[in-house]
Amino acid sequence: MPNLKTQQLLVPFLIFLATATFPSDIKASTDTNGVYLPCSDTKVKISDGFTFGIAFASRDSFFFNLSHQLSPCDRRLSLSSLNSQLAVFRPKLDEISLLTINTSSFFPDTYGGYMVAFAGRKYAARSVPAFVANSTYTVNSFTLVLEFQKGRLQNLYWKRDGCASCAGKSNFVCLNKQDCAIKISDCKNRGGSVDCSIGIQLAFSGTDKHLAVLNSWYEVENLRQYSLYSLYSNLRDSLTSQYNKFF
Ligand SMILES: *[C@@H]1O[C@H](CO)[C@@H](O)[C@H](O)[C@H]1NC(C)=O
Ligand SMILES: *[C@@H]1O[C@H](CO)[C@@H](O)[C@H](O)[C@H]1NC(C)=O
Ligand SMILES: *[C@@H]1O[C@H](CO)[C@@H](O)[C@H](O)[C@H]1NC(C)=O
Image 1 (cartoon, helix red, strand yellow):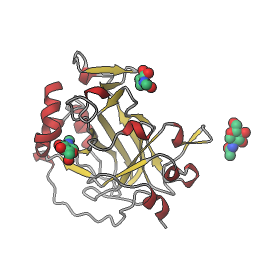
Image 2: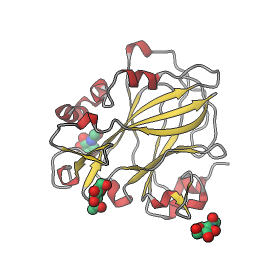
Image 3: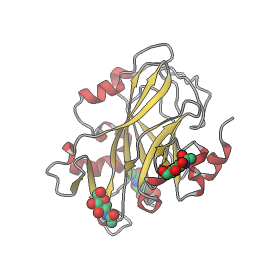
Image 4: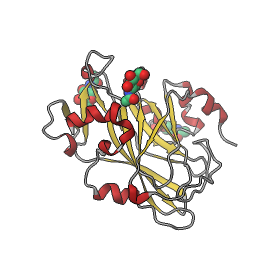
């Protein structure tokens, strides 16, 4: 049984999913995956929807006994009783997608400033915690790769570009040689004018349950850029226009 307690106590605050449409990539799509909760196990095939979560909390709260990182689904973390937030997404397997989390009323720095992407229970997979924001800086652009084997999620990892996408851009600061960050004071609702909503570029690797190879990570990597915002036509009036000023 899914952990309903966690589902109810971690309040999903905003879900907005945008999907890229690469002409070469249009397939007849049918979603045959009946599992809609992130803390459940499933096996998926290409064009199935796949539900996963992103939890926001302090870095320490993702570790049991300050030493073992556990999945946010694991009750031993008792994330739901800590200062945390949960976002749930359902992208289609092997479709390059951009997830956005609107930060006009959600400030990640007030929830500990780190995020972990996760799915599964018995076969729990989770990313390492990624820095999102503290009271000085915020990171807005991420690339997340979901790696499947025979249709089962094995791993989620953040791909960094070593600040290549923001080199020489005066609005950005390169943190720890890996994250392009903006000053919080430049963000809308925090005294500045930039929409600091979080954009997560999603890609897939590995194989689906019929052993078909997932190609979307390969495609993203070959485009040799980590900020593909201009490809998402449906975001033209929100994230894209302002990111175009920077990238
Ligand atoms: C937690 O860590 C402490 C100190 O490192 C150790 O003594 C204790 O056995 C650990 N508890 C568990 C449940 O792993
Ligand atoms: C915010 O994070 C940056 C990068 O890790 C660090 O240099 C800075 O001291 C932090 N600021 C605060 C107020 O914690
Ligand atoms: C976030 O929400 C605010 C208020 O609803 C809206 O004005 C803004 O355009 C949104 N930003 C994005 C990136 O969708």
